[in-house]
Length: 395
Image (cartoon, rainbow, N blue to C red):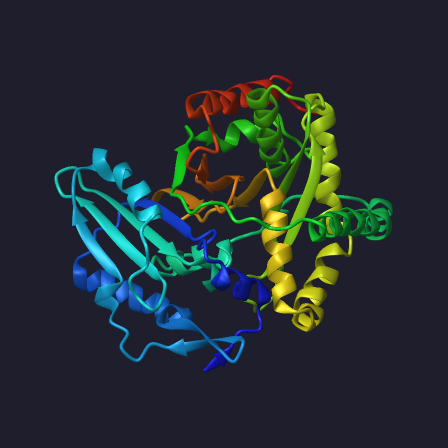
């Protein structure tokens, strides 16, 4: 057995709600027979042996164990259908329970007449973070590594020193304030219900890049889009709590991410909102928050009682209004489009964003009933985009 030292993976494994299992689907021009599909899967398993393992709890700890009865044929299905029905499988697979010890599955959709193909890949989030999960899927297509969300951020030495000192203090004060508030709350799990989803029309990356500049990044713009959407939909002036993972480069953890939790007002005008977000994300990049948090996760968290860790995780997530997830997708000749979504846990709305060529694909996932008027919520996303786009080249 292999001991799991990654506490985030442990917490997700113990989550009775199966919180944040990930479903990724790719529209591809890759035509595969059953033998070829198994070959690609075996290549991925060689690179990521965890796909052949399962988690087991022993003596109050959690380990990885190889499944001696592992049969790859139990993990995939080939389904023949028409392309216009491919989307109908999203909800079904999203809420489908795993039936194998190794908690992942793959469905390969084929429309023989139109030569359209789609790969659905679902995996328990305790196995890996979003970037590693995408890498697992991309390894079947033999693609390259993925960049992180801080690409193309620039600052001078004076600003960098400012963020290293004051940015670090600000971020940790904000984080521990939410931690202390969460400790005072009793966690009440929501009823188990199915996850619903809203798939938005793709936004154009080239258009967003035209609007933004060195002072405002694409990621800043998309984060502001979430906040502006909340303002338009709720029609209320309020502070919202947004949690999102930031990838820790070089970490060997299964879930190599630091939690980012922001308490931010939805009332700011566009220019103020974008510059505020840019400052916050510069703080994360240039401060010591990420390396310190990485140290805490690796060397300090294991000494904190696991029950307390789980309580904090549940309490913080229950307080969140939104989960923001943004992945820079891969470019590969076999990929026509890619989408990414996760199971929701409580009352939060998950903004799942991934890029594909010139498309920015957004899927919102949420528990049934959390969004009362889904049609209006979608309209608010487009209205927020139009509003933020109206002031090109923010200075």
